Length: 164
Image (cartoon, rainbow, N blue to C red; front, side, top):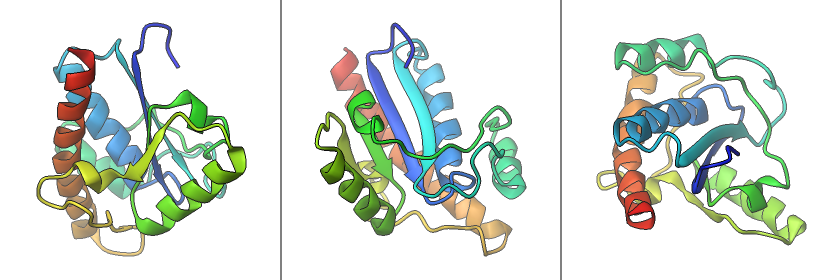
C-alpha cells in the first residue's frame, strides 16, 4: 500500500484476468477523477493461481479501452492471507468468490477488511453476481463493465464519507 493512502480496496474474482482487473481499472479511473489517487490504494486479485503474472484477458482490455479505461499495466495476482489486514475493503465479484474469501479470512483470524460482494454498493444491480464473461461472447464484457461502473459509483460515495 502506498504511504499516503487512507483507504485500500481489493477487488477479487476467480482468476484475476476479467472481472477484478476491470473493476480495478474502472474504480482507479473514478478515484482519479475524484482527485483521490493519492488517498485510495486499489488492487485486484484472484482466488486461484492459474494466471499469476498474466495481463487481463484481451477482451476485457478491449472493452475497457472502448470506455477510456486502461488495464494494460495490470497483472494477475492471487489473494494472500495478509490482504485481510492490508485492505479496508475486499470485494468479491460473486457468491463463490465471497465464500472463498470468508473461508480464508476465518483461517487467517486477523481481519480488518470489510469482506462483501462488490454489488453491495450498486444501485441497479445490488446483490447480483458480476457474471464471469470468460466463456461467453464480447457482450458479456460489456455487461460486466455496466455492473462495475454502477457499483463503483456507490463505493466511491461510501469512501467519500470516510475521506471528507
